Image 1: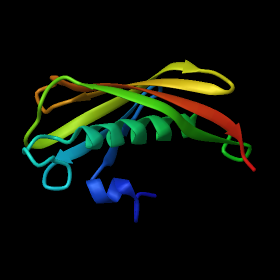
Image 2: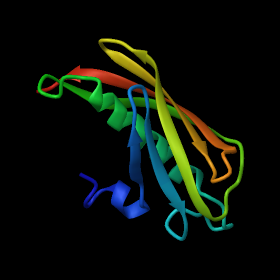
Image 3: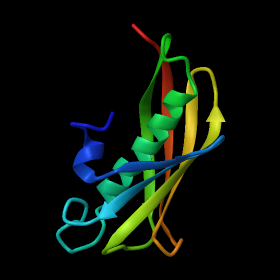
Image 4: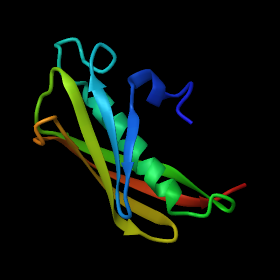
Amino acid sequence: MAHGTLLEALGIEIVELGRDFIRGTLPVDRRTRQPFGLLHGGASVALAETLGSIAAGLCIDPAREMAVGLEINANHVRAVTEGTVTGTARPLHLGRSTQVWDIRIEDAAGRLVCVSRLTIAVVPRR
């Protein structure tokens, strides 16, 4: 599923799927750092939207509906220069026409790096 996508380009991997969460990792390397050597905020947002979007898709009937991103925000609270960060998405609201997901990204020591909220629109498949 990731072949030829942003997930492959950035090295995003889905590592765990639970009853009420999905977890994935992102390497902090030449692909994901900004020019000053820190994890790029856009890479964190890409991880957050990936996790929330996949999770949203698992909560709908894919034969009848599609889950599409409507809005995302992120607060970057800690710099990371190397290693791997791990994101965990959990639902805040699972409605018929919208979903809201909370995504927390942490460094290898479990410290909060980024917190994001993703709003998904659930639309009929055409």
